[in-house]
Image 1 (spheres, rainbow, N blue to C red):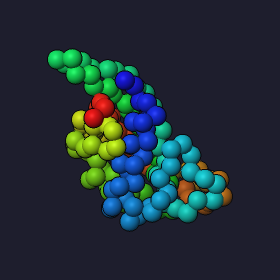
Image 2: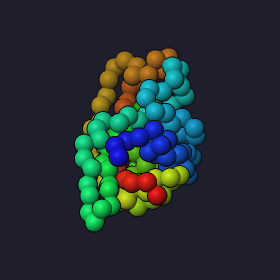
Image 3: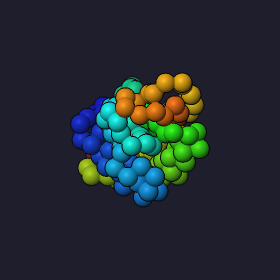
Image 4: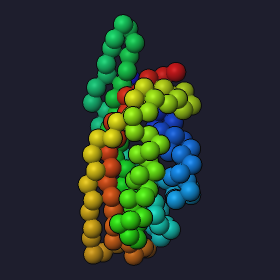
Length: 139
């Protein structure tokens, strides 16, 4: 089972359930791109790959790699959001909806600063990109 619509819906709900993250971004957690003119900071996530399915004792486990883009007015604000996500997800085993996230691993971080807006209608110039590797299966 690769990253099905249900797995992605459950991942979105998992992010939205992280109270420390919600305290920073409210409901500004989007699959794909943030809406134009969104209040910052925002979190946008995309599936990068669903490369592998693992089988052990007839127990299928799928892997999905997601990239989260955190857009903010300052590097500190972006880092605060990334830290809230890391604390809530990294190294965890969580069930959300009908998906068991058997393991969630922080996969990498890249900080980018630009001189122009990354999100249409805003003036921010800081984006922090964070990747997570999700190992998951149906409950």
